[in-house]
Length: 262
Length: 327
Image (cartoon, rainbow over all chains, first blue to last red):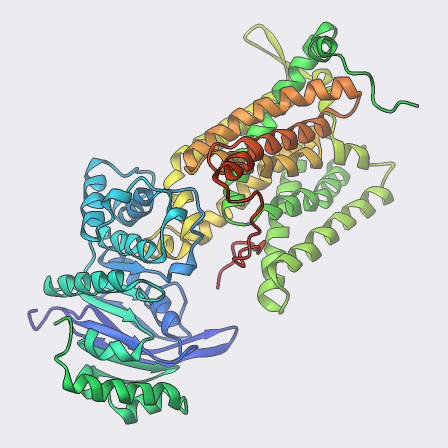
């Protein structure tokens, strides 16, 4: 990355409120290019709200978000998005291919239909997540892990530079989890920037280059090794000591092992 | 006393066409046009779990129609359409407003809104009964049976009743809209967050759908009454969804079902000597039941054959008649 290139994501003094009740206060951060960033915090910390605010879906009460130096709308095509799996109706009458093609819509503009080129991109993306054999399958006939892979393929089809993923590892099988980790690693290797909402502290440390600790306010943001400390996690999670002791255990275990996935 | 007239297959099939066949023809054509237009716009409502919003709008247009009558004292003025569409959109706005500013859930907000607006309409009509040429019976059942006797318009050597012509134009316009905005309607229905994030505003598509819905309801309502409209917003696409997994196929099937409902309804109505609009709904339900039983993959018979039992209650917590309002 050349020094003058604008960062993939810059957030300044962002405050977001629902029904006049603030959910996020004064978030300030600059995410450097080519990083795999984990967003970690307790339930209700505003992790999904942060993603929606970055996508321009939740208007901020104050502050601003820049994507590659511009407001979201000007750079929408450079952002890919993976929503929480439960956020859509999986009985919807579409097949796997239809869903992945939706990733191309942002490149098409109004009134245009996806063409042959878009289908080829979609097929290549399905191949990457090992779901090409399921292209014609109705989406209700998929397992949770397969649904998540379809969503990932759709995001890949967006061919973006900044990816926002909301709990991609929630409720998926082990094979899918490791497949997703591999793909995230490949994307990072190609210089993409990824922000991943994650709830499992035991794996957070191994998966991510940087961590954003969030609990309505930004507790800390920085390289995982500097941020993933007992004190900072306690500041994020408050008195939820069961989680913390689990983490402390996993931390001591992991220290003896070689980190995975790198 | 035997309430049900004797059934005879030959009479059942021939009766509507033996005498007054032209009237029968226009009832079927009008029924098809209304069913198809309602079915097309209704498919997207059902997908968005907003099936009852059509119900709400079709009741809420009543005060709009009543006020427009009072102002214009004529039945087929443009003002009436504007009044009715305005009342429909006002209902949509009021539901969202109540939901957003109180703790009332969307379905309850819908219940509050449309019953109130409908009642206001009923009161207005009762108060100004001498000035409003509109009775509640006609609002509920419409007058599809009399469509042939409406003013007509010479077209291709045929006398086409004006309501039929108007409905045909409405359906055609709606078809064009669906063809043009299919991709946008699909993605905003399936995943409004992704849609908005790639620049296809789910909010504007929602308002566009509500506007189309109001227009279709108002034009249909005027000639066929509320019951047929409410039923046809839901029945064709729900029946289609029992038979197919692809939205495009469901939309096409709902067109075919629309014709079937209209024809079957006419025969049923002639046999029972009842309102064709009501009979079309009953015919629609019977066809829904047939699809339910015989659907090749998800029908009752298919499930029994697979040995999975015939009834599996949905306990996935998805039984939420929401309004597509997502936080």
